[in-house]
Length: 155
Image (cartoon, rainbow, N blue to C red):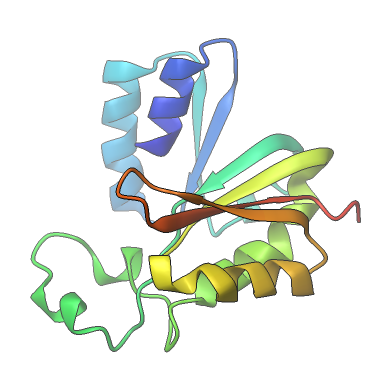
């Protein structure tokens, strides 16, 4: 959904979406056909693995960020647990992004990561530990700190 929204707003941009779930990609293919034909490319794989030879201006990620012991996961009916749960502290996926995304961003590239409102400080710390700069958090429409942006570390 994020890739399609960006592609719709920026029709001259090429948008690449990566997902490890074939089921999610099947749904995305249908949505691309219906809403964003022509400027969205879908790739199957884990994080940056399928795009290692490419360089991007911006990476936008909505990774799993819920603690694996969160009671809300037990109530799930339709959403796959793997799409939400990310280890004991909910930061496993964000750790991977902080470590990997710099290698596929252009020198002036920006990374945006959605996360839980209570994870703002931990996400900023992870990014800083991996050498990201200009780290700042943005609030969602409810006023909660939910998206952290950072610039590539130049490595």
